[in-house]
Picture 1 (spheres, rainbow, N blue to C red):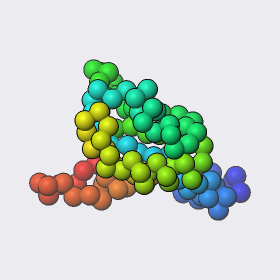
Picture 2: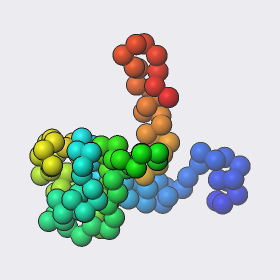
Picture 3: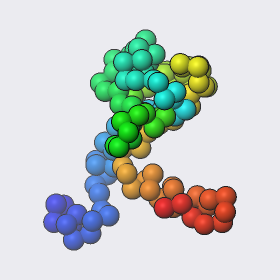
Picture 4: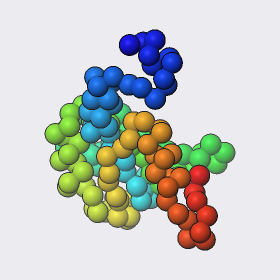
Length: 125
């Protein structure tokens, strides 16, 4: 199987796809964050729903300021699902946040962006 994945890079075993899918069910994307929200505040807001493995607020490389979104990685699907249902649309640091399951695979988000038309008729890449 390893040689098949070298020959055909898009190939992945059912086990690999299941593990990737399962992992994405424990990762949450948190959008609409205040630029003042840091990882400690984000962790404190989501901590009550279950054990958190990692919290990450995405920052600009040059300025170091928050880009307004982040990720929360739970140890269980149950905790992630509960947090998604209860925190989506809630206020955090004065902003309504949006919660979605995060994609582990960068290819999925790239494909979605390239298929989304921009308002001026060009495609976002």
